[in-house]
Length: 156
Image (cartoon, rainbow, N blue to C red; front, side):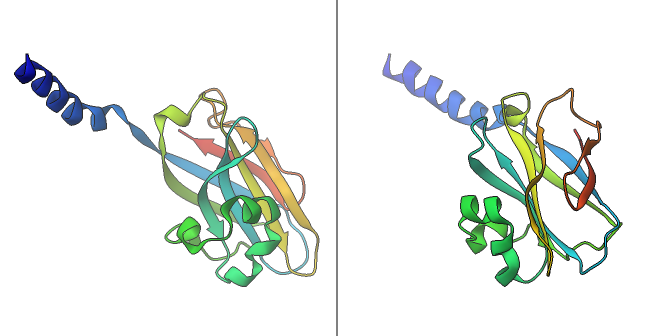
């Protein structure tokens, strides 16, 4: 009996990582035409209650300005471990930011949202410039932004 239990545990331990599937998701953010400096953007996941879960991408190299990405900054604690490896240059007026990220299949259609906070130097900050549910139906459907973001799409 002990051998059967041990064998079952071993098979489960080998098979379990295969169950956690992930897929590449392309995030496309088109900015509006505005006057001023390049925008800083934080693209992140929240749960169904709006609580921060994970940083997907941060556009803007100078971490000292991240505090202006208000909701993301509060949720992530602006810990470098939250944005190391998932950051790049800021995005200019009228430009498009396109990045690919890996997301677990279990996040899709499970109440999670993709949010974008945006900020431009000497202009107002935009908390949740974009907030869209992460659903299969929402894939490839453009969502309008509120401040600096013109539109946002994600492709599963």
